[in-house]
Length: 191
Image (cartoon, rainbow, N blue to C red):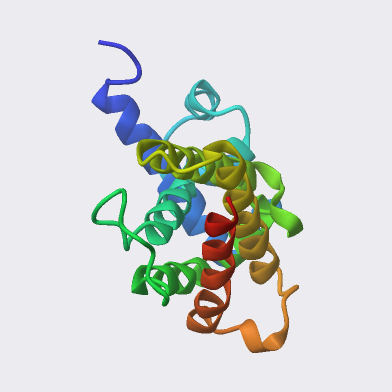
């Protein structure tokens, strides 16, 4: 049995992720220590370093759900790979944005303005790959170019929104979804 499939490893990593998220509910990631995380998780420090290089690596792993939720929210309207996107954003997009706001303090640490940082890089990669694969599957032109543009745009706008760098009128998740959706669709059509 490998470490990847070992249920004990999965349970330990889940306890570490939960411990970190609980610690970050009280304070910023920069004020959280490995000692506090392992103490809360009930594991040893050596166990932590067996699975993670540092707290940032654990935080990115703990926040992987936001990446998957974002990718799924942007593609929630697709029941068929060749379906045309709706004029209005899928409800899942506003719901995702509302959920992201709940952990904004942690996400801001990992998703820098403009979309950089370890969480931004992961979101960009996964969103780009999903968009590219879907475009390629239906024979849409320039799947790599459009996928890069869509992934970069969404990642940057999400990061700037979480950092409060967008106009105050876009503070509401539903309003942001309504504004970003036509932009993403325009990028798809430009390709």
